[in-house]
Length: 270
Image (tube, rainbow, N blue to C red; front, side):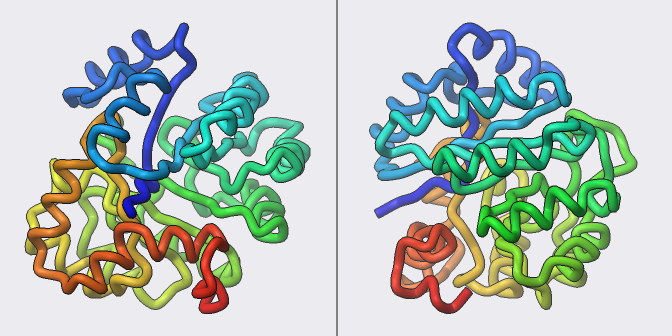
């Protein structure tokens, strides 16, 4: 089994423009056109059984539309869509409740696009609401190559959130901090957070990825691609080449995801 915990799709009418804009901003080559159909094709072709679809409310105004789309994605039996809320939205807490009631399992935050530092205490009521509902919070970790410094989710700020919400289900994408591997090891390995491997095969030397994953532990690492910016096949080859055992690879590729989602007996270790 293979579960991709970090995938992006867009509504059909917006996908072409969104992918082109993001690719130009960060100088990345996309591997899908950003639509659900093309993403499904890629996932099937490359052996992915289920995939977490991450959506981002970049403004308060877009929040409800983004979450309507996330809820609609539940029609795909292989999809695990996450919604998104914006801390400046007057309806943020209501949206968390609405998402939970609709069966959405988590919330995605991208602090660069949403323009707030991750440890801004204005966000704490939203984090608390997610934690109380048992919803996973997945954060873009570290730098985003489409944005200039200062970074809004560096590991030291993420640590403050993890410390404030030790019982929350928190995933920090990009090995805990894009382009900030050593900081991620120093600041986050002793906290409650999980990490994913999104975009690592295109941006992180294998020896660095191995060191980060070993520091966090293979039971706190989730297979993720950041599709359309990387592919399942490339990411799987990369992870398989790092030198982990078969058991450890199974943890990374699907067991940890099932645990975090509460779909395995092992979920009691959370």
